[in-house]
Image 1 (cartoon, rainbow, N blue to C red):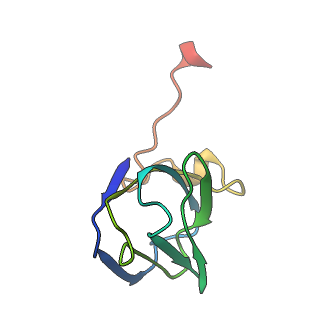
Image 2 (cartoon, rainbow, N blue to C red):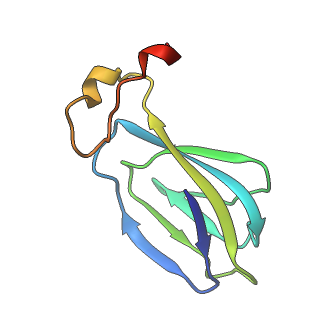
Image 3 (cartoon, helix red, strand yellow):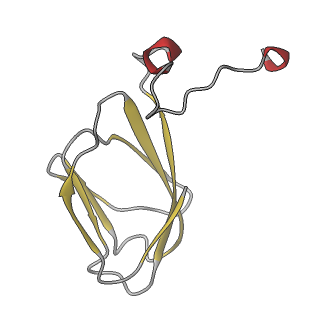
Length: 104
């Protein structure tokens, strides 16, 4: 998904529902350095064409309090490497789908 954050935005501390999904944020455009991602008390800033990979089950917050313009990133969520597809199959929350046979 592509996420735009406006200057002055402050997303309060929260955590994801499970530790089996990891997040990748890719900085695209805007004030990437002014925006901050705080994960488990460590602060990160985005850089254009660089990624931040992190576990959303840790307490985290995002803010654009020091931004001079919108910050735009792409977020990709992926399966934790310690998980297998069978951990997800049958769960309505994961939207798991089998790989079509013709693509295997």
